[in-house]
Image (tube, rainbow, N blue to C red; front, side, top):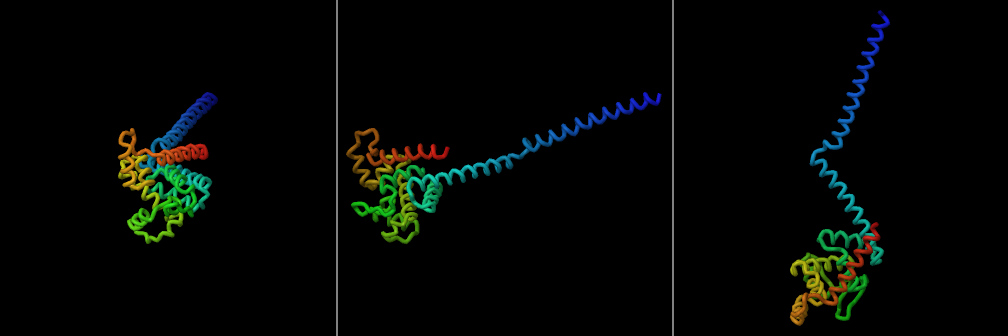
Length: 219
């Protein structure tokens, strides 16, 4: 009798322990799922933003490294270039295409008509752009890499905006001046894209090549 009573109690204890273990396991699993799925939308957005920032930071670093290897400008100037393009929402590969076509990335370049620096800016363009930015201007500053990059970016963004994103018109105007573009287009009124020029095509060719190179460089 005692043995049967003992066995009954032992069985009951085992059953109770089993159900307690199941309950604890389910609770732990629920907590894990809660941690995974139970985040608020705000928390999810914050995490996404953090990852986006991390990706952006990594991409910026690689762009700086790529620009440094391509142009042989110092890292500080390349970092400035990347950040200014980002701030002004300008495609950096387009800028690199312009700099390649204008000066072959030579900050000391002087053109036959007096153009100076990386973006081969003329004084009649550079001076008003600099003054509108609140910068003190003198022509030798165009040999300063960051100063020239800033003015070149500002002028490109301005032209892209006034020509409603037409890169051929913007680039041809950068090369010929706005009046020069008008005169050029008047002579080409029969063309599918009167603003297209050898200059704009070459810059866009360089930009496309640099984008492809960077994609390989980045992988």
